Image 1 (tube, rainbow, N blue to C red):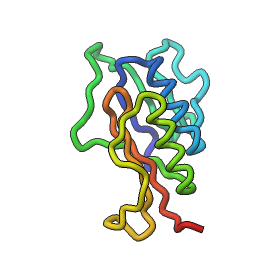
Image 2 (cartoon, rainbow, N blue to C red; image 1 turned 180 degrees about the horizontal axis):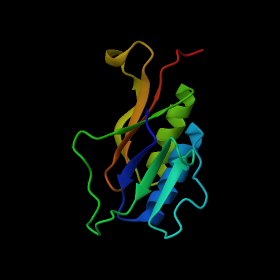
Image 3 (cartoon, rainbow, N blue to C red; image 1 turned 90 degrees about the vertical axis):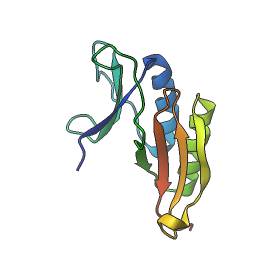
Length: 131
């Protein structure tokens, strides 16, 4: 359904460090040579995607977050959710909900929620039952 999702950043170098670390446990690597002018980076699969695109806003105004906006990443295991959460916090992210089951969303819905340093809300979720 999606080609890409885009999030704004006010510090691309900081965002690259954050997303390189936080997305590695989920199996998402940065796309090499994605943006030759140095204003954005992407993780996932090259065009047509899917990928997450992090960019400085085209209009030159500061990046800001959307109220109610969140990007969710699928994790293969609960351990990957835990690793995503740990890496995100270790690289400038903030806690929005520690790893754990959220039974209100389903009996095996295991997720963690963070914000990057620009305030973008993210989560990683595993739908698989514990082996």
